[in-house]
Structures are given as structure tokens and as C-alpha cells.
Image (tube, rainbow, N blue to C red):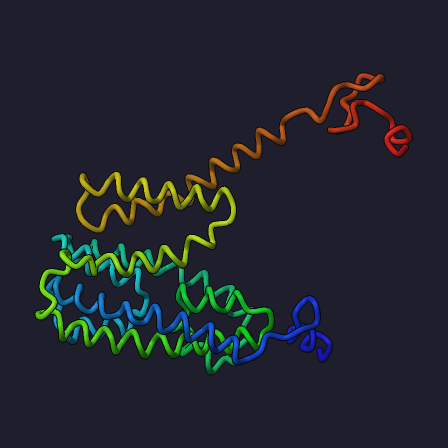
Length: 268
């Protein structure tokens, strides 16, 4: 047990990341993203929600993409239930983040319900970037605390100043939240399948936007993931059915890359 704990506190090369560096990185993300809460406050007030409703969304929901999806659908005249459903399915991704972070952080049981409120895109990105468990805990805590406090403060300021700002569409503030989300998501799309899912989701969402009620295209875009996974599994199945190589002298297929040569000849 002692050996396992020691391993989790060191990187692969035996070095540690200074706590000050972790705090600096976490604060950078928390402050940068937290300021966009002002845009949400203005957009939410412009969609018809009251001050208490706007602040309650940031305090209780606290996941920017879902919040912007909800108020955006309401502002476009969408059904409240459809708008809420779209926001809910966007927020489901945080449950999968939690599965990974629960193993990485290994927090005490008494703390987990409180920490679950901070499991969002930004805290997950900062936490997964850390080399040790100690650094991951610091990054998660600092990012979550700074972002939660600043996001709620700027939400309040945005809702109070909505009348002075005027039309949010003229300022483009309703695009601030999705832009931040895409900036965090893009570097994480490393495989071809992940990029295919993202591209297909964009095509479905934008393509169906003119023909479906507000909020529904977001739900349909969720189909991008199973469609891409099914296509990948079929492609992998066809590749697995391909013959290994040309037939050898005995009539059997030789392994790929051997050209029908024997093991002794290949070893020379």
C-alpha cells in the first residue's frame, strides 16, 4: 500500500509538478471561463428568465453548455420541456467525467457529493492534465472553487446589467459559452472516431436547426456517437475478415508481412 501511494505521487520520470504551477494553471482556467458567466447572465435575462431563476441555474446546474442551451432554446421560442431535455442530455457527459475523476482523485466519501457539483469540462481538463494525484486534487479544487465563485458572481452582474447591454444578439454574447466549450473540446479530439463524432454532431445540429423546433436539434445531434461507433465496428469487422497473406507452399495463408516465408527465413 505504501509503495502504491508513493507511485501515485510521482511522475514517470520521478519528478513532481510544483504546487504553485498547478494553482497558476487552475486559476488561469477558472478566471478565463468564469468571466463568461456575465454573458450567460445577460443572455438568460434576455430570454425572459428572472434574476432569481438565472442565478439559480448557475448555482444549482453549473454547467455552462447546458445553461446556454437552455436559455438559447427559450430565447428562440422553444418549448420549455424540450429546452430542458436538451440541457439535460448535454449535462449527462459530466456523469462520465465523474467516473474517471472518482478513481483519479480518490476523495473521501463525505466530500464526494460536494465535489460532484464541480465535475464539469474545465475541472476535468485541468485534473487530467496533472501528473500526480496530489496535483490532480489541487487542480480540481482550485479550478472548481475559482470558477464556481466567479461564474456565479458574473452571472449576477450580467443579469443585473442586461437592460443596459440591450440586445444580446447584437453583441454576440450568446455565442460566448459555446465558444469556450469548443475551445476546451477541440484539443481533446485526438482519434479519428472522436473527430468523426464531433463533425457529425455539428452537421446534424446545424442541418436540422431550420426544420426542427428549438432545442430538438441538440437532442438529435446526440445520435452522432452511436452512429460513428457502429460505422467504426463495421469497418473493423471488414478489416478482420481480410486474409492474412498469400498462400504458402502448403496451401495455407501465411501471416501478413511474411510473404509465405518460414520462421527461420524471417529471422535471418
